[in-house]
Length: 581
Image (cartoon, rainbow, N blue to C red; front, side):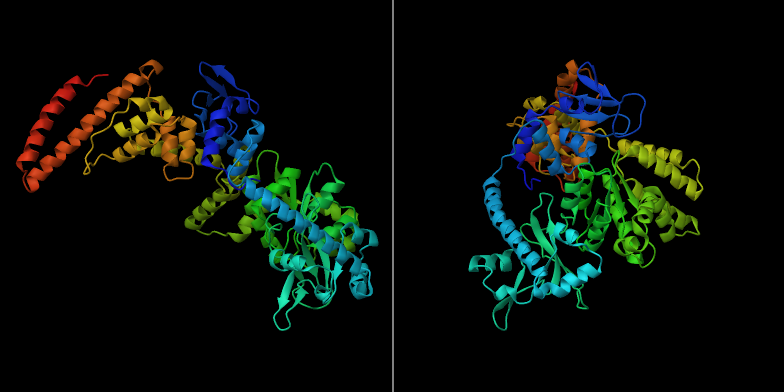
């Protein structure tokens, strides 16, 4: 994934892409005049209220209020991050991403190739030592745990002997990389010798989706602590990105109908040996957004199966919360609750594959686990507690992008709290909030001008230089002047303006101004805009007039300001008499 993209590239992309061409391949659109209409993909409706404007390169839904440019559409429709949306658009429209960091990327790639080669050599070294005399106890432990020689070989399991780091296995350059970059070796300060952080442990190589070894996991086979140890994060290994076993299960299955997420390496390997070849493990950390996105790239169904204790249940609840924004149409998560004190490795060995697969088949759906856990953690005996509970439950449900799923969950929530028409009440309250927001946002002259400028950027040529005063009280005047000065000599579009304010405090206001309907025919927009400019000039002069009158009352005016006030009165009379649309 790209990590950086310049503003210049984004503007260039918006100039070259066509929002209609993109959206029409995802939903049915019918052309009416300049616009294209269709059924909104972001909420449930029978009649089309979703409009795509090819001239402005924007979309807007009059039903749910969803709107934005082509980047917003990809982010919301495909449930992607901003950078991933840019990457997808560049691929769709064949616009290569070029930026000043390309050279750095190439240099980094060459370096990483050296790291991958060194990690492969080290893994080969560990594998060989498992079958030597120093690895005898480690191999015996694995065989006693029930692992076959085939499975040990398949997952490239090895052993790290004590003090190997001081032998001539590597040269000085490799030692430096293993020490400073890959952080496999540590320096013993007493005798200046290196030692392996995984020494005297069974080694599990961690592979990325391409099959490159990016890290190691080490497990003790005696009573030492810590029981498990993972590679430190480095140039090629990030715990939040990688999943143990993903490469192996992808190699075995072209299509993965489901993927089970477990806690440990041993769980993955044992399940694989029992022919359950769709399990991956998180690497000693909580599941992350990167993990979930990566899994949903390969499957539509994730089953969370953690250890049968309170910590395992809590980890499943946290995984549910992390997964909410990824539950778009067709994606689902389930939960497999194990008996107390059991993990996948111990349980499948006790009851065998058939019974274990029955447990998988009888997993808890999202909604069952969600409400079961929610009501277990939140008991209420008063209206206040019940209200807080409703807000908490809705705060989770609102994060789910799938509108149909949201509706079903809200209905189910109403049934469980005893409000049968809860969905109707919820929709009514939401519509009232939208009306209040729109009513509070007054249509001032400045806002009308800004709205027309954003919707019709060519009008910027008609904006004159305003004579303004430092003590002006007109709300938004200085922003309007700054806005015009910034864009006056640029090639701008409505989509670009919207993109410029993404992630800023003004983003919401800009979106409201984009959607304002001024109830003016297209051929009269220019005339109305000029009328508003004239009106603003009058407002500026009136504001100055009020200031001078107020100053006269407080401290009196000198002759210069008296002449200014008298002149303002004459000018305003003339301008108001000429003010016509």
